[in-house]
Length: 354
Image (cartoon, rainbow, N blue to C red; front, side, top):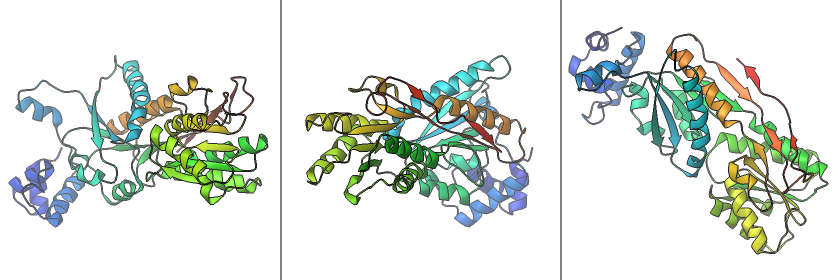
């Protein structure tokens, strides 16, 4: 493995300067961006890998296991992290006899992934799973070359390995469900966040809905905060507009659908008799709403397992090129929309795309 001294020589800087940059302290010591990039490029050329275990030993800590960082955005989507961690922990436990890992939870602010310097230097972990980046964060990742392997969760990439679902197809399938129920006036409640997954979900629904002859008026496309309160306020906005409510609503988030159900109930609108509604994610709470919520099942636990195995393989140098796995979702039919018999209607199975 390359040493910091060799990197300093290749970058034509002092060993101290190279050490500060590789330890993520370049900005603190006001080292220019050009010099930092020159050092990082030299490190990449020499295939430098930070020795995290040695650093902890030098500081008096115990020998550490390989560390996987889970980057999760600090917003209301944090509610979904429990299912992901469950899937991740099950995967790690399944191979505990062969290899153990540590998990580092790394919260970050959406659109500010560029401020997490350890992602580039690799001084805190050996590999990273990046969940729910904004489109601005995605653009940033395409421009940089981190020192550790990365797997993207619920996003696609031309550069990195990723685990994703076909969000556009998901939107189409919800539109097909509404069409099969005879709806002609439909609406969408959309989380007001920068997310390629949510955007594709919405586009698939809108395009397929119009293709099937459904009308989606401008006032029936409502963007609100990604929360239960946001869903509640979205329905209030629909009611305040004065025109007739759509007979079916697609909420691109279960969280927002819960708030929407409450607002509809307060307004005296019966679900599903007056308005049918479909959510997305299949959170556990959807089994206990009144009425129970028809939703799109997002296979979070299985996707977490795929993220882990891809990243572990990359950390062990089993993959020389980026690898992707795409899952497809299915509808879970409950009382808020569908045949009201608690039937699960599978749309399709998961598939590997490499």
